[in-house]
Image (cartoon, rainbow, N blue to C red; front, top):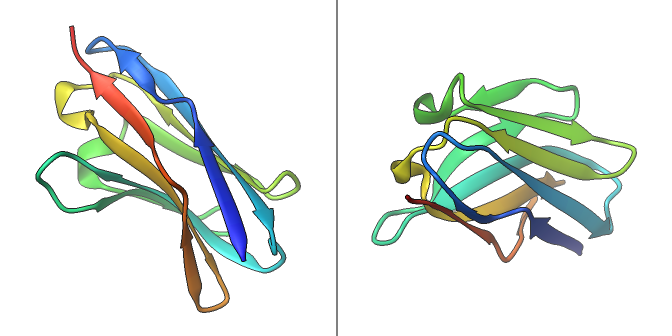
Length: 115
């Protein structure tokens, strides 16, 4: 089992920044992909950004140029730096990792972008 704990969510004004962090613990050997997903009220969960063990990144079109995903393989953490936040970025953000053939999810951290 892999346990994931997210932190860093909160309330921010449009144009502001937040940094989300996710720490993995448990059976962490062999974690490949690490990612952030989000789910807004009434919408399906969607991929925000993903990073491979080697550092290859993928971003949703809606966040390209504004968000940056990074990981520290030694600390088993994955961060999401979010800049120029918009109201439409408001959502519950979930950390996700792939280990072997299993996906693991955190419980989420809420990001609210509002004046």
